Image 1 (cartoon, rainbow, N blue to C red):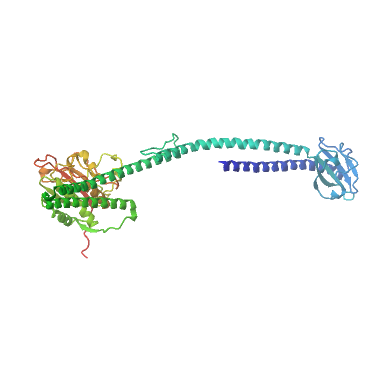
Image 2 (image 1 turned 180 degrees about the vertical axis):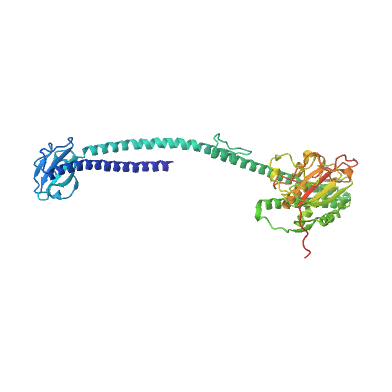
Length: 527
C-alpha cells in the first residue's frame, strides 16, 4: 500500500508541475496576443502617418512607444516614458518582430515586463513600435496556483491514502479471516471450516472452494485412519491367535498335540498371508488410480470369459458350482490375472455362503448404456446422493452409449444381502452382523478388490436378489439396483464377506446375485 501511495504522490506532483507549466505558457501567450494586437494597430497608424500624441491605449496595463532609427521617441502613450525607450539599442533588431522580457524598473513598473516590437512606417523613414505589458498579474496567478497545489496536494494524497487503506482493508478483511481460520485449523486437531463471507464475490467462491477441499481432505483422512486401524486390527488378530496357541502349547509341554498346533498355525499363517496380499493389491490399485497416465503397466489382452469361468468353477467342490456356458465364445479385453481375481473372489464369496448351489453364467453382448435384457441395470429415477467419501453414481465408470458388454452373473442360494447393506458391503473391512467370525469369513476385502478391478476393466458391478426357486436364475428386483463402482480410496469401497447361515439352520433369504458387465470384444484373429 505504501508503494501505491508513493506512486500516487509522484503522479500528482508531476501533474501539478505540468499544470503550472501549461498555465504559465497559456497566460504568456495571452499577454503576447494582446500586446501584438495593440502594436499592429499603432503600426498601421504610423504607416499612414496619422500617429496621434499621446497614443490611444485601452486600459492602463500597456505602455506604447514609437521610436525611429536613431532611438528617439516619436510618440508614446499617456503613461509611457517619453525620454527613455523600453529597450536599449543593443536589444533592438530593426525590421523584425521581437518578444523580450525586461526589468520593470526601466518602465517604472514592478516585476518583469513583456515587450514586443513591430516594424512600422514608410521604407524611407522606418519606425519601431514598442508595446510593454507587466507580467506581475501572470506571476501572481501562477504563485496562487502553486500555493494551492502545495497545500492541497499533500492533503489530497493523505485523504486518498486513508480511503485506499480503508477500502483495501475492507477488501482484504475476508482474506485475513480465511488466513486466521486456516491457522486455527492447522493448529488444532479435528475438522474445521473457513469462514465464508456474505458478499457473492471472488473471495466467497474461494472460501467455498477451500471448504470443499477441506471436506475432501477430511474424508480422505478419515478413510485413511479407518483403513489403518482396521488393517492393524486384522493383522493383530491372527498374530495374537498364533501367540496364544504357542503359549498354550508350551505350557502343556508333553501333552501338546504338536501336529495339530502346526496345522492351526499354518492355517493362521495362510490367512495372514492372504490378508497382506489383499492389502498390497488394494494399495497398488489406489496408487495406479492416483497416478493416472503414470500408473504401472499391466498385461492387457483378449480373454475368453467362458474358459475363465470354467477354470475358476473347476476349483470348487462343495457346494458344486454350476456353469452355464455361453452359446458362443465371449471375448473381452483386460488383464487376465485381474479378471480371474474378480471371478475367484465372487465365487469364493458365493461358495462360502451358499446352502447347496452356486451358478455361473455369461451372456451378451448387449449394447447401450444399460443392456436391454432383464439382467441389465434398471434405470434410476434420478441422481443418487453419494455417501460420505464416495463418488456420486453419475461419476461411476460403467457402460457408455453404443458399446457392447458381456454380463457375468454369480448366483447363490444363501441368505442374500438386505437392500440397505448392498452398498455398504463394498466398503473395505466391512462385514455384516452375522458374518463376524473370521473362521467362516474373510477380512472384508474381497468385494472391494472386485469393485476396483472391475473399474479398471471399464465395467460395472451390482448386487441383487436371486430367485432360488427357479434354479438360481436372476429375476428383476422391485427396487432399482445400486451401481457400486466408484473411485478408489479409503472408505469408498471394500469387500464385505457375506453372511453365512448358522450350522443346521435352513436359510430363508432370497439368495444373492452379483452381476458384472465387462466390455465385449470381437473374437480375435487366430494368428
